[in-house]
Length: 96
Image (cartoon, rainbow, N blue to C red; front, top):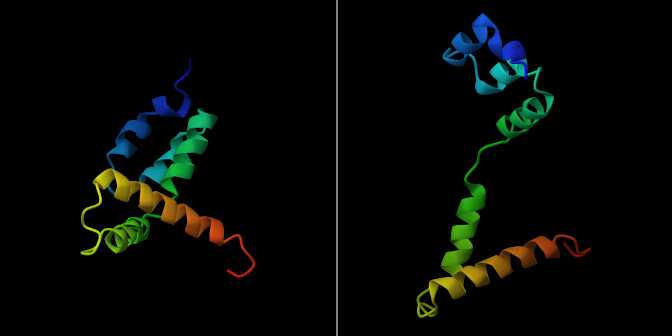
């Protein structure tokens, strides 16, 4: 087991550097561990957004409204799951 670029003097100090993003750190020092390097770069390059959560909450509010407030939380979760998956499937239709 070799530490490769991880053992370089600057690698540990660069981790604490506020100017160097985690993505840039992995791009600079992670090449000796190709599988971990690729995974880290893929994870760190994902966009962060709350739109998926907000869409889910909106669906939840639509399903669990004043008229249907007697639904159990488990039943509501199942209905939100089904509704979300039906939306995904409908995108494959020509009419979409």
